Length: 440
Image (cartoon, rainbow, N blue to C red; front, side):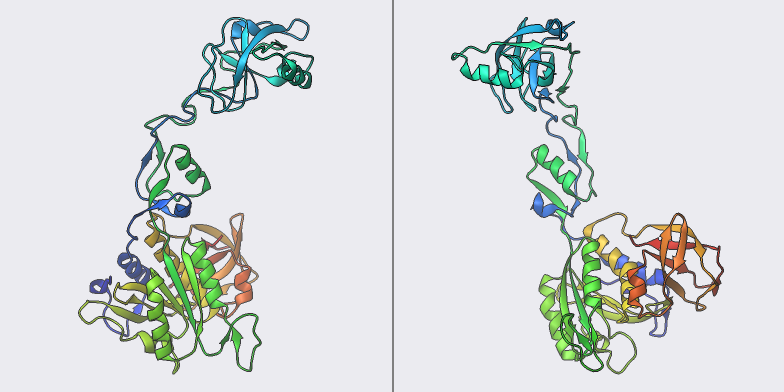
C-alpha cells in the first residue's frame, strides 16, 4: 500500500505540497471493477468501452401522431382541394403486425409507432380533418360510430415530402458504434443510453466509501447546547459533504474525545466500511494531539511502509499532515489538521484527488486558471511556504475574501476559488496575475 521507498528520509524533513500529493497518488490505487445494476452504477466510472449492439431507433418510426401516407397521394393537397385517402388501419406504438399502405390509402399512426410498408411520410393530424368528419373530434366520434371493419377516409390539407416526420432507423446511433468510452462517469443521460441499447448492468469501479472522523473533546454536535470552552463540530460535516461532492459514498462519525484508545477503537470499527479514512484534528505537536498518539504505531512491521507517517508541509494553511495505511487491508488514511480552513484546504488538495483516483478517473484535480488579483493592498505570504488564500473568481479576476487565519469559516463559505501564492513569493501586488484553483 505504501510508497515508503521513495519518501524523503528523516522526521525533520519539510515536505513540499507536490511531494506529499505525489506520495498519496502513487500509493492509492483505483478500486477493483464490479458489475452493477444500472441505477446502482450512477456516479461510477465505466471500466470498458461500450458498443451499440443494435441501431437506435431500431426501425423507422413516426415522430408525430397523424397518418402514414404515400408522397404521391398528397402531392398538391390544399385546404380547397384536399387529398381524400382511405384509412386502412391503425398503427400503435409497439405494433407487431403492420397493414401495408397502398395507392390512395393511409394508416392512422401514433408517435413512436413503426412506419408501415408502402408509407413514405407522416402527415400530422393537424394537417387533416381527423378522419371521417370535419375535424379531429368529429372524426373520432364518426369512427366510433362506424360499423366494424369500416375505417373510413381522411382529408389531408397539405402535401408532405418523403420521410417527413419519420425518425430513420439508426438516426440516433448505429449498431457497432461506440456508445460510451471507458472512463465515462455514469450520469442520468449515460444510464438512459445504456438502458436504451439493452444493457441492464455496467462494469464500473464503485464509488469509494469514505469515513470521516473528527476529534476533539471540545466539539459539540450542531443542535446541542454549547458549554464553556466548547465549539460546534463543523469539520466532519464539511469534509463529509466534500467527499460526497467528489463522488464518494461518505459516512460521518461524530466527534471522538481526546483519548487515544477510544479513537483507535473507533477507527478499527470503521475499517469494515471504509475504502478511505479521513481524520481531522490532533495531528500537530500539542499535548493532546490524539491522532498522532493513537496511530503512530499501528503499522504492520512485516509490511514496509505500513502505518501513518506524520509530517510537516511547506504550506499555509495545513502545515501538519498525516498519511499512510491502516488495518488488515491496508486502508489508506489521511490525517488532516483540525482548524476548519486548514482542514478544508487540505481536503481539496489531497483527499479529493485520492477519492478521484480510487474512482478510476483520469483527471483527479480541480481545474485551475490564471486570474488578475483585485485588492486594495498587496497580499503577504510567508517565505518558503505555498499559501492558499480564499477568493471569489469571476471574468478572469479574483478577489481575496477573509484573511489568512485558518479558523475563518465564514470567509470560506463565500469563496469559490483558492489563490495560490508560490513558496518563493512574499508579496503579491494588486493587478498581478495569480494562479487560482476553482472550487465550484
